[in-house]
Image 1 (tube, helix red, strand yellow):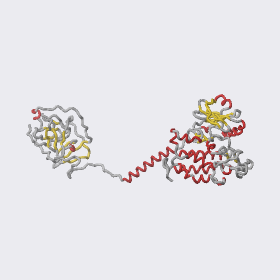
Image 2 (cartoon, rainbow, N blue to C red):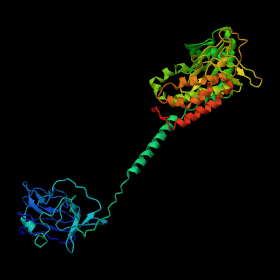
Image 3 (tube, helix red, strand yellow):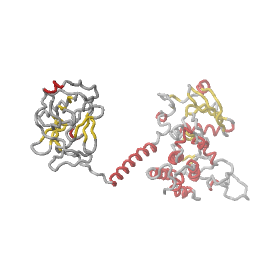
Length: 520
């Protein structure tokens, strides 16, 4: 047996390390195999590569061994042996010098061997081998088997007392080589701020693109059908307008949903599809009824409700049914949970644009300049338009659309009764004062500029009082002021109003977000 206190020495490239255990008999580790031959009284094994090279190894209370260093005690646990012939993989270009007295975690992953002078060198593996928790190797307790091992050769001391410091605090000697470490490039705060602004702008653009993408205009697919035909719902082909016989036999009434001075409206069903059936209420109003049918037939477009069929003999007309009803119930519709997300200034402004679009279409229709006469007050005006499921507006009641012929200076008058109130244009009021009784023959005619006068009031209702609507009103103030000119000739055309509305929408979509109230 080797004497106590004999210090370890370096043997070969396989790195056989001999460790002196005071006051116990010595034990040894085999380099690349890292197999520990335990003391007969020991009960624990050391982990692979954790060499007692920088302190004093001494037995613990339970019989296991620990390495006492200058700052902490390293207790070593068991690990499986590896084949002795297997070479360690060396990380290319990376070596680290450590002093001969260094110990602890810095050297437990490599093959350590002494240099010619002074410090030792530890070549690290390319990748650390994960520890495998298995049962400890069988212990050899026969002293006679230990005597045959190479334990008698002199070796250098590798344990200057108290030289070990914490790995995070240690200083390497001047002659050590440093491997290439990644440079830490600090990012200036201004760059982070700029990056955050760019990301916010991208998110804002995506949000606005989602919010402001307008749905396809109502009825565009239906309007692809030739004149005299229609297509709605899930229909793939265009069908001819329904005749009197089809209306009498194929349409089933469900319930009444509205009534006016000229006709009564019923929710009905045709081929399992909901439709609106309108019936003439008074025979003396048949002329107005037939005029409405004529307008429906001639003005079929995305601005007018879809015509499905009619029967002049029976005084019936069948159109597409819109469950959201007329614009009179707009506020009630927007208060429903399903449509609360649409109750914003930009959706309401698009409704106003739809309304002005319809007025402009009537003023430039194929039949000439048409005037929406059935609009003597706001409620009456709103009842003439339907709100579609795609949140667009279509004209529904076209019974009173006289034509203005400016070429021969043919003007119009909306009805034969006196009109009163602030909603109608000044030229529609009786001009001779209250002292003079109203006389229809003396009442001066007028043109389509009466519709322009009413645009600001209708738009104000459509905009409502949601957040951001006051900003929209501010930007529309000038064009609305022009619409309210007393002289009709000084008022803008419907196309000019439409262009202004569109410009305001385009400008505000980039500067005003929903929920922002005071930003002019």
